[in-house]
Length: 264
Image 1: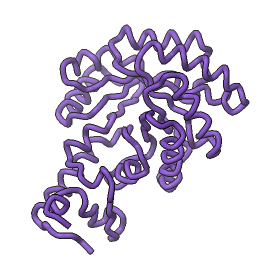
Image 2: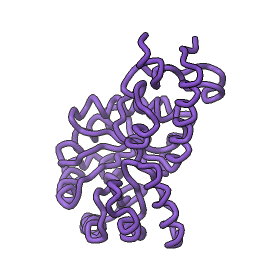
Image 3: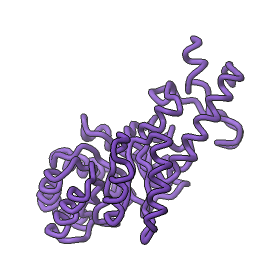
Image 4: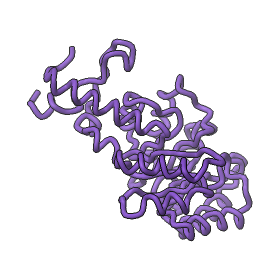
């Protein structure tokens, strides 16, 4: 194993992150540094009624860490865009959470208002109830129109779906013209004890819609969690714990530089 691997993420995430058992990542995550970890994170802030001062604070933090994106509620889009202007961080607006139950016209209006407020992308919840009831054409038609407004990541709510439904939903999302299929929101029924199940969902999504980005979200709070999702095929990580994860990554990299050996 060469020096490049020794000084990279190929080593381990260790010392209590998964008990005392080292975790090895032998994929693209293995060679990511802390800055590259930040670049796949959509930092998420979904606090209803948050003050303008709070939004400014979390946006300042997002700029300091250099996240890929910053996901907010519709009411915070305009201010977030103003705060992050010129930073390269994509402002994403969450649309029709938690289950996509609004009528199509309302969903279109939400998407158009997000565009007017300066959003770069939208994360829209698929009409999950319609999908579960077999109304696939209606679900597709709804998403096709929404995807014309802004680059769209579609939340399918994988925790509510069977494996076959995850496959079908991912295919619909790709056909609709979205840029990304996403597992869940903050209301993900899969908790931390079921992260392996989420990883399985990501593999299904990745295999069902080649060329489509996959975003993992829900209960991803540590570097080990992020690594598990990336190893399963996730391209983007949605989390409110981005700061903690990047700090953890920075600390691990420091340890590796000091140690410079493989932990067996």
